Length: 418
Image 1 (cartoon, helix red, strand yellow):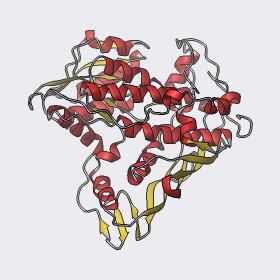
Image 2 (cartoon, helix red, strand yellow):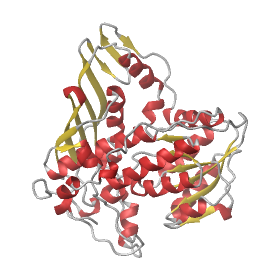
Image 3 (cartoon, one colour):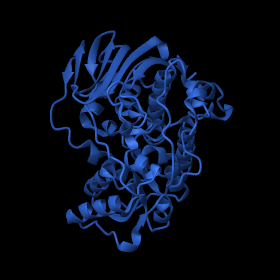
Image 4 (spheres, helix red, strand yellow):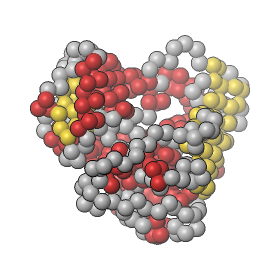
């Protein structure tokens, strides 16, 4: 894994080829399928979120079947399969011969007869899995975030462009973009309900999360993968893995990504080795085009209060993007918002059947890079620009990944990781 001591130099040594990676999407053509066409999907990543995504997809539209499962670990796949079977859903069609285990299980799953694939493995695997899915011409639902480092993100952007060329639908697990209360509130903000936006803030503060002690027989790699939250090569740190939701909302509201960030963060409470080497708190000042600043805060510390929210201030009012607007044109969401976790799949499947495939790659990639930008600003203690981090060769993927030994990197030290 790349040592932290070289992080700042890596950020500065970017590849010029990435400079145009966020250019507008290419136009594409698509063959219109029948509205009642049966859609068969496979799930890659059978943990809690993957299992939930498969269930949501089954419930999102008629004539949808889950036919294949893949995971690095046999017990996770078995638990997922048992849960889906217990639903008694007519779309459960997973036979023994379409259950695949191991680090290469995703490749074997993609050899099956599938229309769609759900990607829900730890985020560090997302670029490789997404590339393979698009290369095999499958429509993709992929959980957020979509990368943990800039090279991975550039791979995702390139695969997203290929998806557009092939007419493949790509939807991401940033479900707020499919949640009625967010959609209606942000539409009004974009129509000028609070005037020009001048500032924003967003938060994901909460208590602790699960961890697993290392068991006899587990290699270092298996232990880290089963505790993927706590290792940057797998999760990107919690600002990337979790807070990306709130940062995605800010990018959506502002219709832009940041130009730079300065940040603080550290590891104050979760200091035991079982928590890997990530931080337990961050605070970032993001500067957006036009001098708009957004304060971002996230925390995972046991025993602390929770607060998950976004807010923006305009020249003529203020708003909670999920609920209400105050100012010249006040408004409050009324009614039932529905489940955004199901709705994102409903919209994805509908776009495929309508012959107008959604492609959310760029939006989720920009939100992922926003989170990576904040992480790197905190890790280094430096002000970092968007292009600097986008172009960076900083690669967190362990070389020659296989089940075996893998040292835990040191905790990043601002002022030392420069």
